[in-house]
Image (cartoon, rainbow, N blue to C red; front, side, top):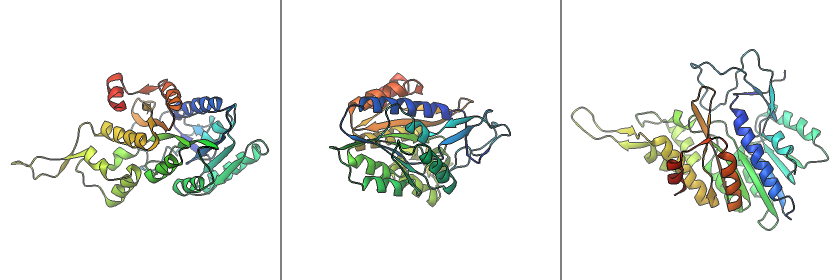
Length: 304
């Protein structure tokens, strides 16, 4: 078996939601005059192995890394996001796969050869920020193009500046993996004493230092404590709503979050959609509501 990426069984849920949305999107635009672009900011190699058994409860996923270690029996393959996008019934006019791992780029080159002659494919061997800059610098406009970008980073390796670049074009919708439990929460110690490198990563991810006040409050000084910071009880939801608010301000519309859990029921991350068109929002909310999302009361608050 080639050395390809290994993912947990919950990856199916994420990829199924992506497939459903891309199918919806390309059907809506099938008879429209625009050229359509699919951008995959963290493309991977096109396929992945599903870990058949859940990881032991004691297993800790590295901070900036998805599940990459396999149990002995890992033979089931699933299509990753590049193949899912390439196989939609109504193909995009152009595909841009961004991937900075040379091994995964080699796999993508094989995918490109497989679809040669029927699909226009660019493979950018670089990081997501650089690749998105390459895309947005191209001669694209609202009068001639429409696009979807799938942003599924390893950990917190997605800079807000890249998301904003896509929004500024006026043509892109985005589907984003908001890796709250898999990455962000692990960078937030109870004391509020965050290493500089982590703080800079979070600043880049959220686009400002606003995240800090959503997570921490000053601890009241008293006889037995000297102040400092403590975590808010609802900090996780506050971070989610902060990111949603930023997406809405940038794109105009943002979906209800779709919560993805692991096989033991623990929350991992949220899928979010954002875009400039209300019809896209309707489709995204319908598709994302097929899985677990925020309850009615929290959904009402999230939309405000």
